[in-house]
Length: 413
Image (tube, rainbow, N blue to C red; front, top):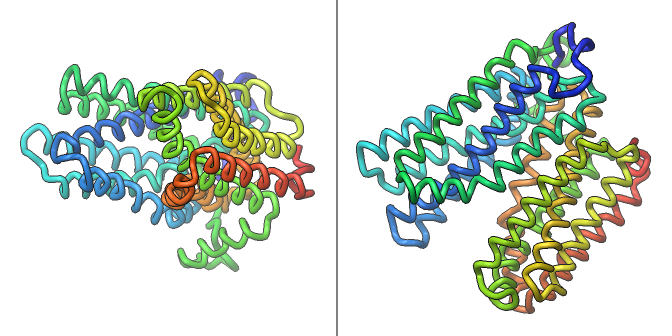
């Protein structure tokens, strides 16, 4: 994976680069589309059927292909290039949204049909996510990666923050068909923006997964990526930290947070306020990581993991919605700051011909363990939310200690 020869002459500030501006527009809009569509899909399925198994079926139809295809998608990214994969996945998303829009407008689709189309979108997401992460190193110089990642992830956090409210309000105001039409239009603009980068982000000379001039099979190429991630201490440690945080935080915050809100914070409606605090913290964390990139990355990773653990454990002690929102903001800030640092570090350190496969592992670590996290939350909830948050927060704090014990991570600059 290489950039055009003119890359060293890029403007000093990241946003001065027109390629990066198009990348931020494309990836930012794609994130908004994801946030809007998830709420649209949930509301539409509830319109089709009574609340219950149908909604879960459709959401699982999105999640399963996304998780199952992530690692093969990483091989595809390394084989044909991140820009081509991201653009192709974006246009597939547009095609599926158009098909769904036609069905919603002119027919009464069944839940099964909606689930099948949603599954196709999940497959497109599996290709898009690692490709989008792998595009940045080919668009901006290495020394600008932290700031560029902060801008991209900040745009994504903004989409996650405002997307649900906008989607629900649009459905109430103009209906399902018009709302989906607007979502599709934004997806098309994102696809156009990302497609303009295909000629900018070029594949390097030769096959990145070849041995003695012979291309590896997809299975062997995937194995090469997994071996690299396992044997590289920094990559292994960061992937383990991301996976553990996902397992120990997602379920407790969502499931335990709902119970906490209902029992101690004045009602289930306060959960929205707490989660908004998490979103604001995420946006702030992304921007902070780009505004002042850390000079001692290893200790920053340790501090980020510790902040997430302390915030999760701190939820055990809150009895007021303001305090809970403040603690959730700390967790969001630590998560986003840590995400920017980890992604930028891997983009800089991982060889270009393996980058798609390694970043697909990062995405997998953030999405594949949600069911386990919900199970853990369910098992601990009978003992009370205090126990739930203390146990899960302590697990993340222990992870921070293990990360700090790694010389390879401690020495990161």
